[in-house]
Length: 227
Image 1: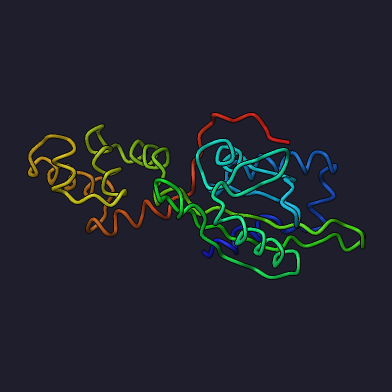
Image 2 (image 1 turned 90 degrees about the horizontal axis):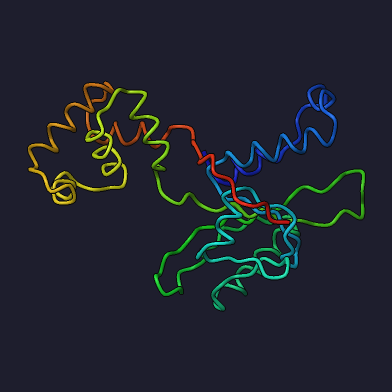
C-alpha cells in the first residue's frame, strides 16, 4: 500500500453515522491516539511550516538528530540545502499538489529520509480555513525490532532464533550473522531451519516478506507532546 494512500486515508473523516457517536473532543483524542500507533512519523504544518500537529514518532524525530527540527513553533530543515525543497513542497501541497522529497542526504552521516508532502483537505464549511500540509516520514527500517520481537514470541522462537530473525530482516546474510554472533555458520543455518519450521515458511525470502507485512507495534513509551 502506498505511503501517501496510508496517510491520506488516515485523515479522511469517518462516516456520518459513526462520527455522530462521538463528541468532537472525544473523536479528536481518539484519532490522536490512533495516529500515535502508526509506524510512520506524521506532521501537519501550515504553508509557512508552523506546526499544527505531530504524532509520537514525528515528535521523536523533531527532538532527535533527524533532518527536521522544531524552532519557535516552526518546522525547519536541519541542513540548509534541504530548506528550499521543503518550502517548495509545502507551497505545492497547499495548492493541492503532492510531492515526495528526500531530506538529510547532505548531513554528516548521509542518512536520508523520504518524506511525502500531501495536501490536507480544507473545511468545506469554512472558506477561511488555514491551508495545511501533511508530512509523512518513511519507515525508519523495514522491520521494527519490537514488531519482530512480538512475532518471534507468538511463533515460539527461542532467543537465539529471534536474534537471527531480526538480523535476516535487517538484510544480513547467514555468514554475516555468524560473524556478528560469534558462532559457526552451521549454527546460524540450524536456527534458520528452526525458524522456518515454526513459522511454516519455505525460505528466507518468504519469511522476511511475512514479517515485513506485519502490522506495526510501536513502543508504549510516549514522548512529551509538542504544541
